[in-house]
Image (tube, rainbow, N blue to C red; front, side, top):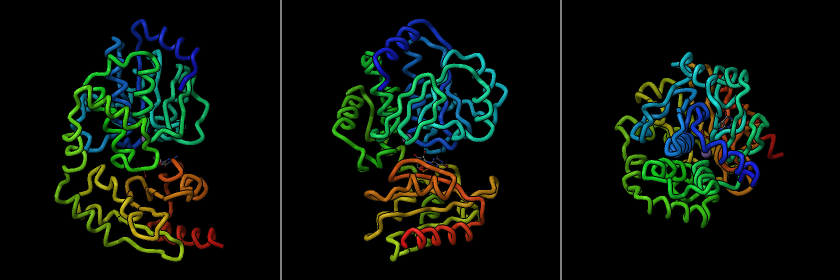
Length: 336
Ligand code: 5GP
Ligand code: MN
């Protein structure tokens, strides 16, 4: 948590209306959108002028979230977004800890500003750009950090159904529905409080997970057929080529969660999914692991990425085939 003095200073700043911009990472997930909108609704309760800028589009499966349609997409509405950033009093950066995570275009815009920033994030090795940093890797989600942040400011009573709904989304998605190791008694206490604020938790699960299009399930089927076992390395991987994505009418968010199947195999402690993105000229990679197998280090060292010990991501500029070859060669090298 922020220290006592920082909390006092911030609370006093927040006593008069301010212009506040909230920023999430590129390709925002449930936790990025949930924490951003949760904080947005909270700051609106405190009568601030708040907007949320996402570097690029949010996924369809989050389109039902309260106020998400007011999100400003930096890469589409660049001038408007820059105006808002420049005229703001504070910028909250949520669910990431290095400005390059907002993508090349937005990174430059943020770097050119001298406006005080506040980071709330649970990834490893935070950069030092913010005035205030609440960075803590023991948290399973940024949403749970926002909940603690609101409480630390003494505003629990302001958490309404909208705020609670948004925070519940990120806690649920980042914890794999409360099953990943960072899910604590505190997480459940937080969720109990959010439910007591009137959220419809069961319906939120339906909206998040039981709302797939037919083509999305077909894409999942394709991915599972592509699942390859690397028994000697206790690893597995999935590939999805651009052609396969096109065949199954891929929409943003459709591949969310597929990587976890590779880890659900018996005897496997590390998995990866390689997703071709012809438009960006990259292979987007997600890694998952169990126990002390550190995919954050792996992604940082070999694939221009990072994340957490058991969940990380990165990218490759080689072809899909070459990237997979490189992945296997690294595993062979690391085993030596
Ligand atoms: P996912 O595989 O779900 O996209 O991401 C898993 C975790 O790794 C998330 O916490 C995410 O923020 C992080 N991550 C994903 N891609 C990248 C990347 O390219 N760079 C860095 N530094 N972290 C990433
Ligand atoms: Mn997160």
